[in-house]
Length: 355
Image (cartoon, rainbow, N blue to C red; front, side):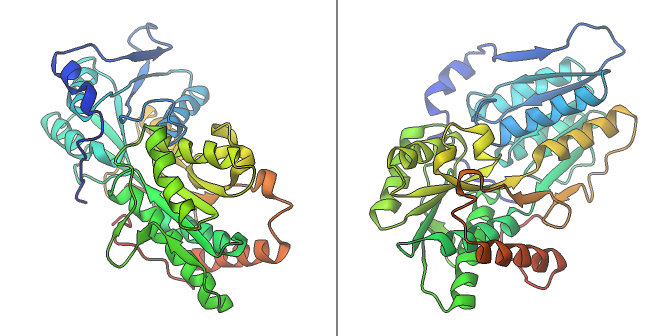
């Protein structure tokens, strides 16, 4: 997997990181002596409250601790990409038993530190570095994104829907590939002409904020899609996407959204504008890995973990406020489509799918 960086992320705080500023850290249950199994997490630049994959990963660590009281958890928040290596290294130096890196952008830093510390157990979300001591947790979100695209096409009144990403990296574009293919499948099945804006799967080009934090950037990109006629928008941009969900809610129903990663009705204040969420079940994957490791079980880097529709690693969240608005016929079609994808009868493909 080739990971692409963007200078826009964290650029303003690179100077502070370079000066050796101590990163913000949270300890939960520390100080109980050497018998504890310490699970330490390094967030991506979105931070622990991104309402997305960082939040999900921390939930998984906390669930592991709840199951096994011998597990101690803590995290450090990366404020810029330059923080990845020092944050991972500080946890190696603190002799954490399990170090979790969150997000595909952390692949290179994690691989480097893991190779330099072969006896240290690492885990990573949304990446597979191919190093023996790094347990990869990946998710075929194209499958659930396909369902979301089909749903959006079926719900759109303008017959235009849209999606945009935070950065053009595989863990983001995989959602977008699935979404536009789901729209195409709806068109083929229904002889419809719903247009998917914001992403061209064939050219792998589309709309991006180049940021996972700034809500004003998310609003700007979302507004551009709405200006082109989209009445349903799926941001795949972490916290930046909150700019779109908030604007959708403020629109009073003129347009709505589909969230990603964590059920938006549980993680954001914008449930009235969120039809559903393409859920990436990071909490269960992280919890299972940490609980196993704490018991002394070996975590195999190959094959690692791959979440899909068949094992509930990815899914569509409940419709919440939209439950009465989604036609029963469309719900039934989604159920059938989910079963067909899980069985392999309907193939969902993406260049960004985990290998």
